[in-house]
Image (cartoon, rainbow, N blue to C red; front, side, top):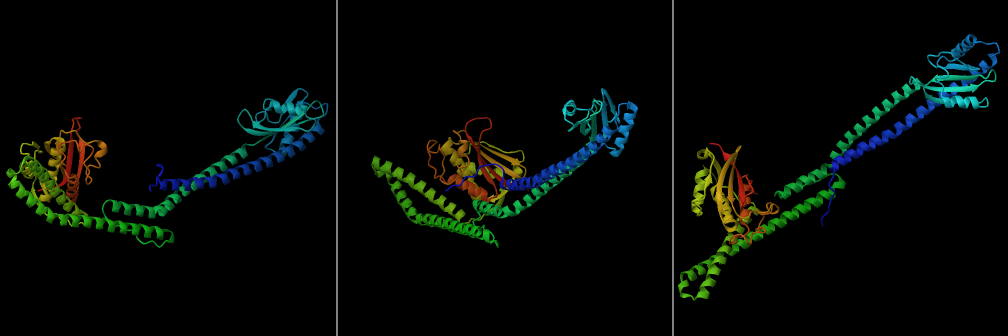
Length: 470
């Protein structure tokens, strides 16, 4: 049963982000509530104080205004009223004349909002108040009352810039605090996610090791009861998998080994028959040829299975020796019947020395050349290149090529590709390229297949091996 996961942010990133957003939410809500409560409290206190003082001052102005009062006397009266609350600036209208205690700070009627002026003018001695900004940008609370004498109106402006500065400072502090707590939450989330996902990471490392062939990889026994079941289940699964693979490998090795004896007898009998094939009629001769061909293919399959099984049970050892690469490749092409195959070497070919198991490396080259013969009409060129401290050997052909979707699977056991049955004779066992991979991997190298860069038909099999500097 396959379980699918949607691709997106990594789990660790999601956990860290969740911690950060949680911390931001937890600190933002109290910060906003704190700001609103402080603002409402400061404004309410200031409004109550300003309204109380303005009411007292309006009553005093009501009592002192008489018919013969002039502008100078009124300005003195307003200055005296301003002394009661220095931060407030009163203004009054007598008949059609406006007088302000400080026209620079609060000019009347220019700094009086028209809507407020209409409200005060139309009110029944109750007064009205309004908060707005003056033309210079100063926030003020303006309270106005109608007076009963000489069609007078009394206004008093209380600045709110100190409250605005206080709230601005408070908001900056709250924002900085929220940001710091959010960063702290992200840091805690990163640390916590790393600790929480450590067991998952170890499971991934163990699974990756098993996938690359290390069947002995196991998880350490955890002291955490919540992880104990996971650890035990994983280790039991890995143990069962190791036993199953070893059992299958041993079975294949035993079967291949047991097949060699009767196969040898059969091949000897076929050789006897081939020695007397002139005595047979035509149908018998054809049957003998088919039998000989299949017996040879069967022999090659058994040999390949035995070789593969040695890798499965990890009993392969390299018989390393140093030799000149160009001499080795020329000998391989001659022995395999490809003596006319062109080989391109770098300028320092006579100095390229590799350390390898000659038998296994010869098997690699023979399998690649045979693969090109069976499926691509034969190899067209061998190219040797140096890349840093590595040597690459490329076997090129001009066949139909290998589709990109098959290039990762062509080296698997018994994989011959979609074109396997249509290219050449198709007499391969399906293990040749798999053995190439195992031999090269045992040398610490790699093998791959690509197409021609110039778009020409065919394939390029590349074997990468480490060079030994002389």
